[in-house]
Amino acid sequence: MYPTSYCCCRTPSAAHNVNIKPHHFVDILAALGGGRSRYEPHPYGHALHTVAHRILADREVCLRIELGADDICAPCRHNVGGTCDDVIDTSFRPEAPASKNTWNLRLDRRWCEALGLKQGDELTAGQLCGLIAGRIDRVPGIYRELPPDRTLLKQRQIEEGARLFPADRTASK
Image (cartoon, rainbow, N blue to C red):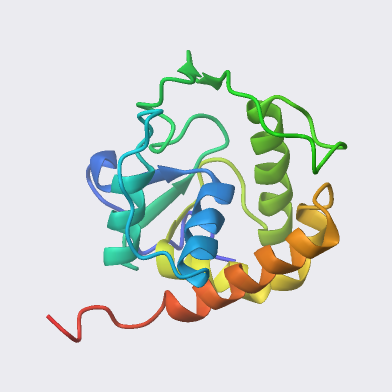
């Protein structure tokens, strides 16, 4: 684990950090592992496109673990006072709560427990990727409300994304 006191990403200004929910980082890895390389602005207005670009461009970017609204959520039209008012499709995951806020918090707490992290911990994107890759076996328990075939696909995509992510992206520049 990379406790906050060890983190090599201490900066004089928090503006240099990315506040991120653990599941959002995992979703970026899974998308990368599933073949996604570009992000476009979303109709909800969230900042996934800018945050994903920043993380994928610099594995040394400092991340701050956030269990509330993170930098992706901040501009979203569903972010109402720091709480997501959106709902999720429960048709294929009937044991999941309909509230996206409750579902996201459940996932983020499970990821934090699996990775030994807590609110406010700081580490680089590369370090977080390494932690996730080392705990890939925890995916079925973290996403236990999903059907087994979807969980297996997610696990494979996260694993592939983690494999691709640490590549030196500056070599071609």
